[in-house]
Amino acid sequence: MTIHRTLLIGGEEIPAASGRTVDDVAPFTGEVYATVAAAGVEDVSRAVDAADRAFPSWAALGPFARRRVLLDAAELLESRADAAVELMASEVGGTQPWARFNVFLAANILREAASSVTAPRGDVLSAEEPGALGLAVREPVGVVAAFAPWNAPLILGTRAFAAPLAAGNTVVLKPSEEAPLASGLFLADVMHEAGLPPGVLNVVTNAPEDAAEVGEALICDRRVRAVNFTGSTGVGRVVGALAASCLKPAVLELGGKNAIIVLDDADLGHAVDAAVFGVFMNSGQICMSGDRVLVHSSVAAEFTSRFVERVAALPHGDPRSPETVIGPLVNAAAASRVAALVADARAKGASVLVGGGAPEGAVHPATVLTGVTPEMEVYGGEAFGPVCAVEVFGSDDEAVALANDTEHGLTCGILTENATRGLVLARRVRTGIVHVNDQSVGDEPQAPFGGVGASGYGRFGGRWGVEAFTTTRWITLATQHAHYPF
Image (tube, rainbow, N blue to C red; front, side, top):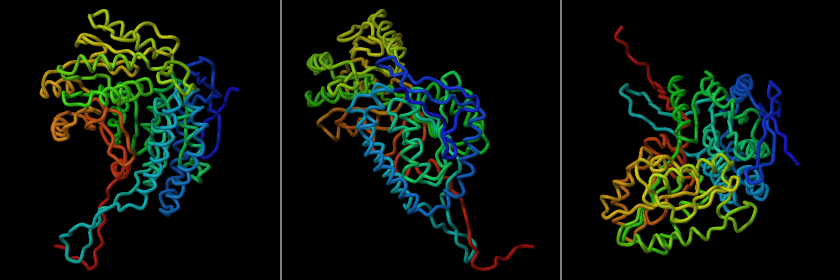
């Protein structure tokens, strides 16, 4: 049965002002899974109205009451894990392990946000005036515009609002057009059942053709005070430029062209396992996925043989099957885009060690390339699919140079049994995140998460996430009357 949802504004479910709706299509079957309201600029204004009205009372709510809402929401989300698995399989083609990890991490993001509510937030300052007390206090900014992507919908949908709400802000959330339920309305339902007051979290869904207009209206509304965006680098550049033009701070977590480095002292069994996971989890549709596997020349032949053998055996197909590793991409167009990258590389001289060929609907086979060179589109562009390139290096310096040969800088994995050597290399790789003796995919709610360069700026997680959505104010208290020169 097709699901029908409207906008969520001020705690009420209301249709778009235009009455328009848009289909939400299941990538594996191609059938309409849901319909949602197609918001326009008028609806954005209504959502910001609601968030602006709700802000004073939410910001003033006692910290223990605010924390209780977040903790209760975490418990509710975990209790709905089975529903979340079904939702992610239908809406974005997520496999069962990926969906359950989304539930696990999203719940812990809420718990981490809850812990920050009562954490110290400010400093006592030295003052020049005798008897004066100076305070630097962090306070909520107001209404936050939040944009959530589709690829890890529960994790990144929750991350879009958890820290802002914990800090006392209100939020207007624009979920991805590919996952309006999983990255938006489903999570908002959980939050409101947990006791979140009306208007504190509002959800505006839209048709793909209206995304630019709706996004601009949200970012540029004068009552919006900060912008929170996770998505592609291309769209992130537009969002960052709009926020800057309106003099609003933004946190941008964008794409990656991440490397997994296999040094000559790595445990090859572990390295193969790590690389298979880091490249092909969620069919490569993770900003942290290892697009490039860089292998020392002395172990390249053995590693590549074992790696290709493992990749060839990965089960493909229906995301509802517990055995499936490579499920569908978010839509058939995404699978065709990945196939075109592979075809371009092959036409320009790359070798396909496994995979390649035409996709079946939205399912693209797990693919390993070698001999990828700069003139090929896949060399510099984020694949965002089940594709990687194996490259060989001869020294640590060469490995660092290859890892840094990208405009992106999100994450990196360095596989070595020598922690000191790995740490030395980690300090030289220009990324926001490095995992020594592990692959490139990793996320914990208390850690500073974000990249550099074309991977964006700002950090989510822990106290860094709270700092991103608060403003510092200087307040003084004079305990005695000052003397003035006139």
